[in-house]
Length: 572
Image (tube, rainbow, N blue to C red; front, side):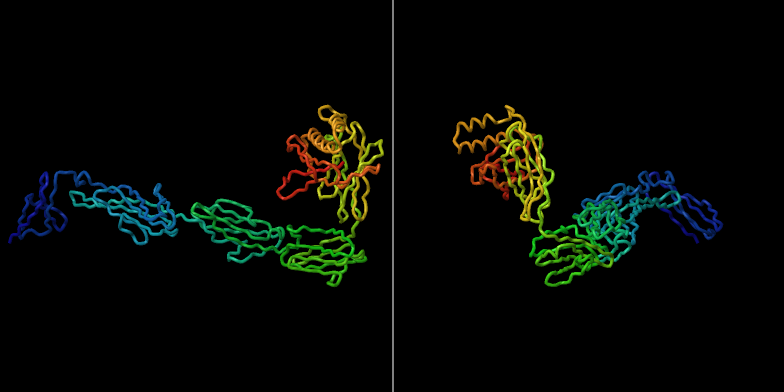
């Protein structure tokens, strides 16, 4: 029996040649024929195969076949959040919540297949994310693969190329923990003890890193750029208690993310810095006075008031004479109908579980005022007809006080007396005018209240010689010769103002409003405030002062007045 095998090939240029081979059981092949057909006889035992070949290089099918190159990535945004996303050096930076597609591409023939190695491999060049989260921050690998057929032995070889995409998901700063020391659980407040070293811990989750700050009562105490901090501090006293804030932000925060904690400091009682403490009170008889104290302490303290009696401290209880009042951190002692026996030392003792504080007070009856100090004249402001005197007020004895200034020619007997009210200025000034040139003047100063007078202070000064460019003697003479009494008074004020401004120098004086009562001359001639007088202003005696003005009455500061101007009223 004969069987015919036929081997056909597709058309090709050049035409394919055909060879029939017989494979023995020992793997030895024997060429049979090179015709398209082969007749099998009963004697042919084994595997008979046919091969066709063309006269080309054995490893290439054609000139365009090649393996895949290095894959490249293309980013396509799919929502507004992703519009700023970009790929640089195989790193994709995108904001959390973005929706987008990354396409993996490369050149290969035949065209490659693509695989993304994620939890479930994606057999596609496209990798799509919807509302990406920070959980997707990792490396994503794209594999491109194709298969080329090789001749003459029908070999098929796979070619693979890979590229890694680093997806960096960025998001706003968020504080994970803000606490003291190693306490992780969030609390309403944290308690520490004075002189204790503590650690403020602020842990921040952010990408990119955050600008972080630590503030105390809205005042920044520390700042850095990081993903968190541990700030070490020593708690010294009650003043370190309060609200602490950790703030963190990066370019994605609309406003800083903040966490607050309240720190309570177990501390010895102290005087509150917001309270003005008055420990010495001078009082009249038969009135009521009150001592007060405002503390800062934790835990809340107790208060006890005492009075020093016969060298021992006597506890004060509420009765008709004394009343103690306590509200939280505040306490007061009220003494009614003051008598001489009530004067003396008082003590307040403040205690809590950490420590104690004692505060002393002194009550005394009204007394005469203390003597003024620093009574002197200003040499640079002495002219041929005027001078400026200054002094510092002393304690007023607990009552309203006035200052009496007297001056006269050293060789004369006629005194000019000025009475000035204490208006609370640290330094007071007065300027005698219409003085005689090149003359020595003797002056006295003392303070007075309803209880009496202080001791006197004495001062001697000498006026300068008249200068044609700065003195006004001739002007005064002409005025008095050519005018009536009323006109004289008005011109006196005008000329005095002009002279006063001529002699001003660059050195400035502290402001003070000088108030006057009346001037009494020893020859019994008295001029009251209803008589004719003029008013001069002074303030910052230098060439930059405001223009000359004339006044006809004492001026006081009102709301809206120039706060840099005070006034002096000489009375003739």
